[in-house]
Length: 312
Image (cartoon, rainbow, N blue to C red; front, side, top):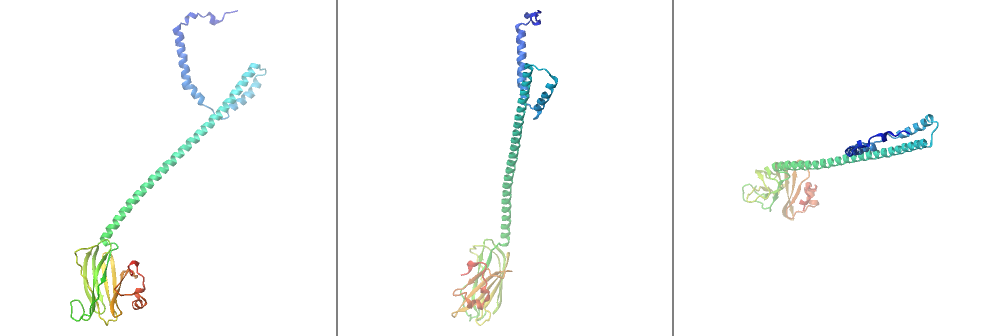
């Protein structure tokens, strides 16, 4: 019997350094395979069905190519089939894992996109509210400037004081024999009223002097304002006086009518802002009663005023 070749080798040639170097090389190769090759191979898997196709091909080719198969070869082919089945199961599992990971990633991306959209919408809404507030502030500032220039909703009216007369001695500005009173101007509102010019006409005595008040302010102190006379003759068929009040925020009219109640003269007044036909306010003198008789005498009293709180 021939001696094996490996026995013929001179073992003295394999010295300790050579063996150590070989072990180091083998160890480095194993580590490299474990770190770079094996993980990639373990994570890799083909499309689903490849190993089943290979298994079917093996199942067809083995009977055709191998007529006589021993027990060991049968065991080997059986092992190969089990391996192929296991690899197919592993491929299906990894494929499902990839699908789950893909869906999770898509869901995460969609969630991130929705969160970004929500944050963008919230920021846009905040910016819109800030811009709206700035715009409202700017508009309010413009309105305030306009109100300062025009007077806003401020206005003046005349309040009739206690009636006197009839005048028997000629008096400047009062007709002879007329019943008269002073009409004191009152300011209502917040913003100053500019370019106030008042004209007055009393049918029974005619036109009275006009007054240019200029600009009037709220809560004026120490600044006297001229008060015009209101007057009428006792036998007048139309005992009224009419004021035309022109200002920077529009034109107003105030009608004053005198009534005799229980042998005493009193008055009622309506304030209008043109072109409105409905009165802004009512003003009544002492002892005046707004009843059917007075409304019949002066039908304008039937119209309800815009400022209801002014009605006594």
